[in-house]
Length: 409
Image (tube, rainbow, N blue to C red; front, top):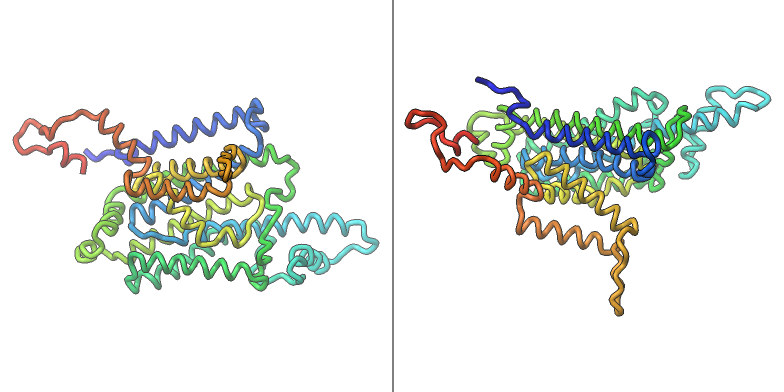
């Protein structure tokens, strides 16, 4: 009898239940909707952490399940942030400009308002004209569509060029990193139309919304939790069944899967584009909570951090990616935010703001050497101990019935 998708993947219900309880607990303890035990700034930190968990899940799909070590997925994360940031900055500036010109003796024309908005946004780079890429910035729905379209097209074109050439392994990783570096260097230029090194700022203010940051932070926290739950569910469905078996087969032995007649390049292209879109959605939720985005967020080092999170959590396990991203993000905030006191040694003082990256790198090396399954591997140890030790006993009464080891495959 064929079992349902949830019955075949009980860990999904466990994850969703834990996420729901966590969301409820934060809601009851926040300043906006609860007892005020958790500050608004920490709620924003938790909301951003949920977004990082979502992009880590996307990274786990493309690397842990399909075997493509992409060192460029944070570029799609940043592009999603830029797309939503353009609308936020335009709409907020439009309200400010319209308010300042409302008392003019002669009512301003739409063209004058647009010029004033351009001067406000691009004056910092010595310009007042809107670049062509801002054509839809006034439209909320158009920019929300671009959150998906722009990173999706970039991933589709890059993946098609790379996979049709059958570039694999470390060479493909270098190509994804080169793509990220090229995009970062382009965004650093003032001529990019995205304010160069200044980036987009003031994104934490929702245009036309009278609510304070307490309420806005909770809205984004709820939205991030919902996006993570939905993204986790969709990703788990994608890697299950026959499709998931083919994807894992590509990871383990690409040549054999191609010999069996499957379109390896098509599967890779779908996974690469699909995960790029998920990363972009995560970025679109992340940067309004961060309040600012600049080209440094798209630098190659960010994508390397993403791979480290997944490796520490345990690649090939969606919950492992969530554990790794959440743990490293929160611990990083603790160490770099002054939560851990410096250690004076007399001849030298260990300042954890400077040493945190060294500690993170050391953790990655130790996990790779001694715990290749990551933190998520601990779950395997627990479940193996709970499961009955049948020693390969027959499942059925007949000789030759499925044995335990075969039933798990």
